[in-house]
Length: 311
Image 1 (cartoon, rainbow, N blue to C red):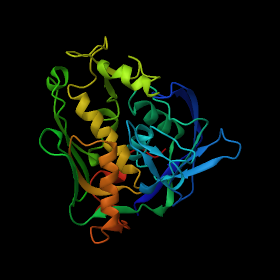
Image 2 (image 1 turned 135 degrees about the horizontal axis):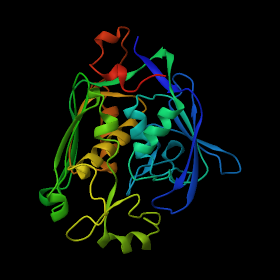
Image 3 (image 1 turned 180 degrees about the vertical axis):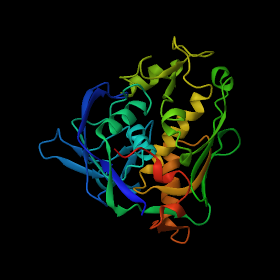
């Protein structure tokens, strides 16, 4: 049987929120089968649990933000996509994340440190079947037209594959790979995707900070681009790091579904808002998906039974 996974032990991390600039501590804990992933705000007088699902998303400006039931007035946790991406990349189904602030720390701007933390805790295989959401027919959402067009689609696929194309019309980004396709069953999430960092433009810094955003951003946790070039002294980690980071974000945004996907995600210039709209459009059409398990691991898509070593 292809089983659910959680952590073997508790692990801690401390960092700064890229938007808030505030120091925040995380404690990642095991959770029982079928519990899903829950953020717990421990800094409040009465701790508040935020169970992760598509309806919990309350804001998608610059990041994916969740609150209980998606209530924008309720306590929230923002910038969850990199941690959620790491959970998806390691095949984790059940987890409690204690957090003593409003924003997940940015760490190095990628998912790599979260992967290291989760694997250092160990991966526990649980005695319950892993429940996949399998896409049965294509669902697509679109926004804008012409130069402003963006779209995202989920197609039937026996496995989990993501294809993304960026188009920023910027000399530094245009000089890198614009299209990336990644198969989650390849077992190469940690090496090929997780290290891709978030990026930002110097021209946007003043506007962001006037809105109380980007206060924790620096060359240590963001790829910074001026009008012509990348400013980070060490350059890029991948030739196509910008496109790969959009794949990393999409993996995290889609894991907010609460179940691993069996689908091919294809997108052009998509972002957090469109990714969440895509999940909501999928769930709204009950004929477009089904929940499946694999009693025989050999019948599961290649690679998905071994997304992370279970020690």
